[in-house]
Amino acid sequence: MDLKTYKKGIIYKFNKLHWNMAKIGREYNVSRQRIHQVLKEWGVDTSYHQKLTILCDNPRCGAVIQKYRSEIERSKNHFCSPKCRGEFGRKNYGKETGA
Image (cartoon, rainbow, N blue to C red):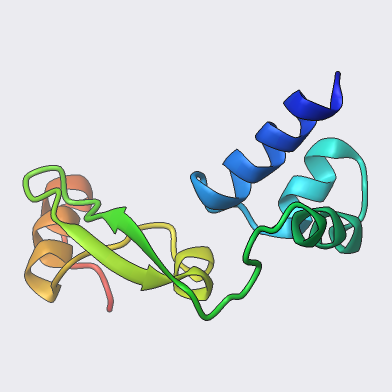
């Protein structure tokens, strides 16, 4: 794999798929610290306090929402409101989901 492909893959997984550095490191068989180091070398903002734009996971909604990277990593699903969370839970699990 050439450096350009390697770089694009890491940046894509970090910025678009919102993978954390440890997960990317496992994918490329390097440490989390090395991923952090190369992201910084390439000028990528690695701050966990930046807000990222994602879509509400309720397929009937799909609203654009902003969440901190740390919030995205903590939760599997992301919703724009408690109402959307409830609709998603009833449709997928037959019950309300916790907040």
